[in-house]
Image 1 (cartoon, helix red, strand yellow):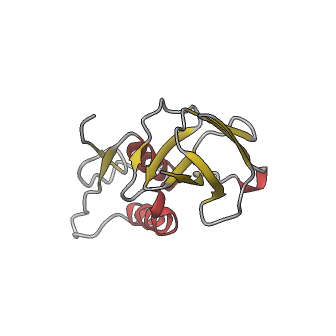
Image 2 (cartoon, rainbow, N blue to C red):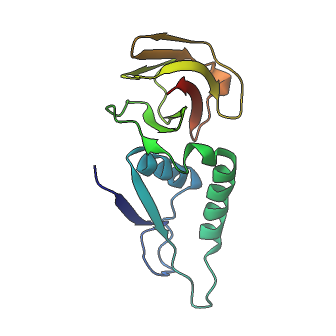
Image 3 (cartoon, rainbow, N blue to C red):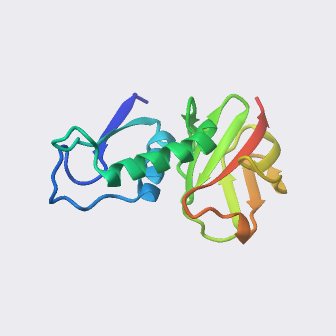
Length: 163
């Protein structure tokens, strides 16, 4: 109900520490962005510069990977709001206008179910990809996704709905 922000680091330090080599992977960081947005928050991600003023190569690599992912999938993140249903076990649901984005982080089979969807779904597709066949009965939505379409970082489905 209230705006919130998660302040976190790429590794375990708020400052440059050459002994801190526990850098999180770009996959972990991207999934963290998805979770924070899916819960209605903002992510502040810290990276402390080295004594030279430059950033650690490991951090630059991860930030570049996050930037590339956001250039490709940013429409499912920027300006979206979480759908006010309980969080599904497979990930997060956000929306903007007549678009509903399903961020699937944890596949538990080939059939994805979403309950409590009040809008009528007109089409379903992979974000920037192929159309998908789906069923909607009342507030229950189901779609089957081929194994080949699953993304190990975040499989994103786009539902076009009637407002």
